[in-house]
Image (tube, rainbow, N blue to C red; front, side, top):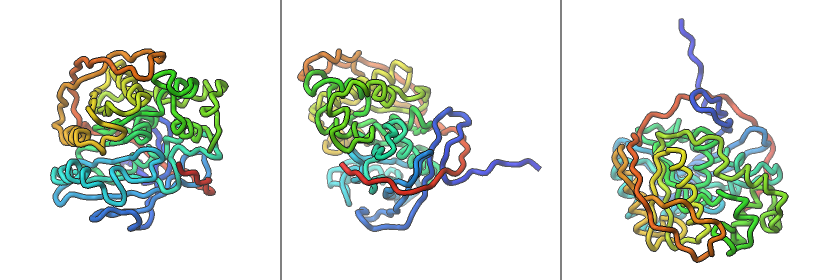
Length: 371
């Protein structure tokens, strides 16, 4: 009699077809109505990650279509991620009418993720760094993929939520069919952002961004990024999005969405990330949003672009692309150069790899720092 290996619900990744860092353990908790949108089902959850004591808490909101499910769209919000993408408890009217309702009508199940413990990149007191912290959202992504199966599995992240997706794809083996990188990833080029005073280059961080980056290195305030401490150069380089372990995911259809009135430090990073995707031969698409600020959900054009991406046919259409990035010494007000064209022909709904899992670890609670 042939023996089969069990698949365990909790997630610590042992790569079979994807060489990746181990995932953590996701535990679904009780049903909750706290901050849950009308018509949705919400559950608390916890995540533990390898080598770190204690768990990280969050809330998972699921809104299902009335008919059969054709795709699952998972949304991660900006900043600390403690709010739901698009509004809380209910998404804004603009988000509902332009994106969510049309997606539901097309058979998409909508899943919004938020963190109730604090920012997913909070490393206090462990001082893990952003790369290892990203195991938390990556673990959530993989649990959703396994427990909400559908022909298409899509990830949407805004700002720091987009960084979570970039880390998850590059270092934790997460393979969505489509990924929307909206207004970011801001955790790219950390050293370039921290080692220059704000306004001196296109990549230099403002004070709020420096606080966020310092939290990833274990400093709730007055940390090395805030103080332009060059001794952290190696750490920043090792934890930046461009330092992920792999760029080998050609079947993933990746869309970079950037508002053209967003801060130049975000526009530049979005452009640089797109150029890296292109350089590695990935299925990349550039979506500049005229009049769009930080977060596509504040813009009719941005939301329409998101709907077109998520509802598109399996073969993507050609999209506009930016050129080679401008030097970081370019003045802050410099505009991005005109786009060029690049064509891609990938199946956006290819099957994900088969992966084996086993259980992770548990321990005591971490301290809570919320930005």
